[in-house]
Image (cartoon, rainbow, N blue to C red; front, top):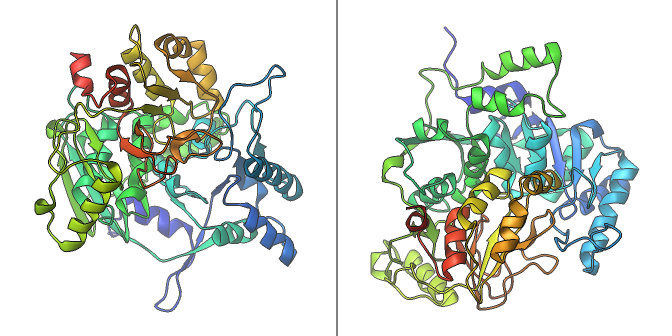
Length: 474
């Protein structure tokens, strides 16, 4: 009898070119390499210096997303790039892709968008693959049952040159979410609750596999939200086993297998879920029935509480480092120990990022804000994750709903998630953001970020303060 294996072990084993030894890491074959303008320039410089070509250009795809402005197009239909550094990065990526024969989705082209949005919507992201990108949130693609993770710039060069990567084998952690989500509780609330439970270092050395009734009930876009923030819990990657939901999402997409190749691919995908009797190195369990909308209060994604909870006190922290961390975070955030966040005044709302900028996110946000108005003194930005998402939202009239409510409808890109190209939160101001990180200065120098779901963000925009979306849904 074969030894039962987890989803992770099946992918790892099938991609191992050279096994790991006590002295050396394993060599893994990489199926798909995604690149963007920020972490790739030095990698191409290295290839040029060594006279090396890209090994598999057809298994590499580039897009422009981080340094791209999201301001409206000019009269010529062009998105102007004002930032000099951003313009240089974009021009360099275009030149690099041209020189090395790598396909590129340029700024303003019909398929351009955030790297972790375009892969799935093109059908490039498929179960059983290994996928890498010079970006932390590559774990997003794990929603399809792919082993996907971020890499550094030197590793980007290594993959370009060899289509392989040196990796030490991580341990496995099952995160089982049983039960059913209540009204107003979303996938974003699940992952924020998980990270609040285990901490930002709780997954260090592990790959997560998300299981359970509540996970199975999620759509693919909701699963992407979950896996996107695996890195924020310290994990190398996050996986969800492929099922009929996965297969239905991929079918018919531009880069999905066709004909007999489709049938063969589906048969392979159906063999990937963890075997009965497979064991994990650790297990964490959550009850979805008990979850409430979540929001962060501090300066890392693990500092999260239910929307109707209170900021912890220093006395509640179990050790000196956590007490010091809480004090430092609250000072930066301008918050008090033990205070509720409900009713906390805000200045800005950002709906977007690779976590929550897909069409389902925009539909949920539009449904809640329809017929309402953004509160006076609050700026609300809605940034679709790709040009395809933007076109679809506009075909459904979502952009008109946002504009009628007083929100800004932008072009596709990473935008205020990391404060590039002018999309940032002013110093000292508070933003309810659907992005994935609330580090000091992440959304701009001195910015103060509350991470939350799209509907919590919308409820807060309408009320001008941190608000519970369940109140509006009721």
